[in-house]
Image 1 (cartoon, rainbow, N blue to C red):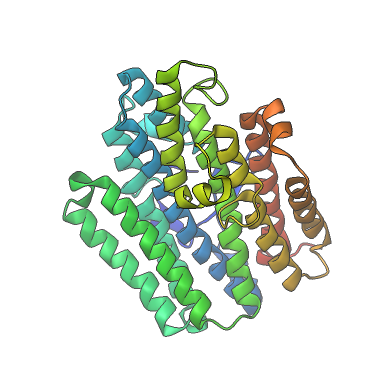
Image 2 (cartoon, helix red, strand yellow):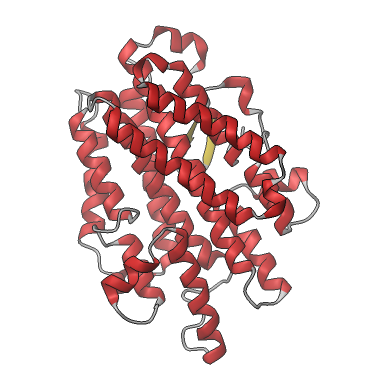
Length: 357
């Protein structure tokens, strides 16, 4: 359950179900972990180490875009809808309301950043990443382990010193920087064998999920697609600042200007983050990486998972943004999240869990 304490069963494994929900799923119990082959057990820890670190970064990105847009001129009702939408997209509304009486910016950020009882909080993700790294410390280079360990220790120090209260945006930037550092150290020092490929699969599977959620949170707060389109000048101006915040949250503001060279338009932002393979956080780029790394570790049990991954990538490669928007971006992203959830379960079944006869 999501409201279980993460330390009760570290390393915890959050695997998307068919509905795309983030569920706490444990590695078939400690007794099953004892019987895993060494490679499978090591790959399992490395996969989730990378995935938790990416999840921490993307949770920071989700919070950052919502925090930045909440500072824009708007009604209190619109700001509240933004925070409610964030909880809804993360599928944490029920867990949040068990602890808090009402939705407000301060409590949502506290719940999503420092709540040890929320397995999807940044605190819990960094802890889980560090615990998975510690479980396979011998398979990591000294630089990778020290980066993971220091990130966990430094984050706790920042929280105790009140970094959230001073400037949440600075803390979010720090989390993103530490995630970038861990990826860079991994790429620069790790042997690129099967364990490395499992890390990459974990990173890009998580990134695809979170990029889709980040896009969707833009629409979730308002029950319409591309709000501001067809509205007056004031609506278009607000829309511009909201989409600018979305682009900056994925480090894509300058990329957008370079690729499109015109004003920020919602459909072009969606196209950049869904269909442009050159964009490292786009859905199609993430699936390119997932498929190529899956091929590198393919085994006798993984043909169906590889087929599903390849089909999802092909669907993205040959889609057009006008077709996506015609059916509704929210519906498209919801379906994508379901398929990524299925894919995550297939990878765990084929590679990271004992195979049943």
